[in-house]
Structures are given as C-alpha cells and as structure tokens.
Length: 98
Image (cartoon, rainbow, N blue to C red; front, side):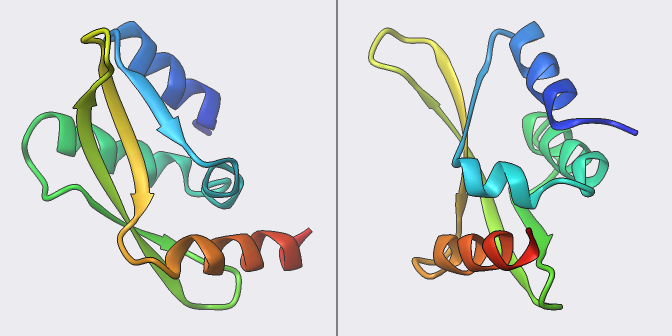
C-alpha cells in the first residue's frame, strides 16, 4: 500500500514541494493510492485538480490541487479544501476518528 510519505517522495523527486495541512494529511490515510492517482493526473494536465476526500462520517470534502511558485521561484503543489468549511469538517472527522 502506498503511504503519504511515498506521495511526498514522488513530489520531491520532481522538485515539487507538497503543501498540505496536517489534518488533511491525517484524513488522507487509507486513501493514499487514489490521492496519488488524482495528484498525478492533475500534474499531467489530465484532470481539473479536484479530489473527493471521503470522511469517516460518510460524507466527503472536495480538495483542490493547485500549482504555484514560492517567492524564490520553486514549484509548490498546494492541497486545500474547495470550500471554507471544508477544513473544519476534516478537522472534526479526524478528531472524532481517533
């Protein structure tokens, strides 16, 4: 099974810094393979960059992949909830799931 650390290593091998909130990182556990596939498709330009993250309560939060550059010009891949309440829902799901 693919781990989140493996996903990070792939990004590092491509000289891309992956920026993910710690709660999202915990919530992705168990879905690393589909997360990785979504990320790869986005980087190849084959998807819109939306990833549906299943939550333990049976719902989901849409995450958005976006590419940016740091102030120093280094490539960054950010993963953020698509809506403002998304991070709160993820935090609640992660905290109740422990």
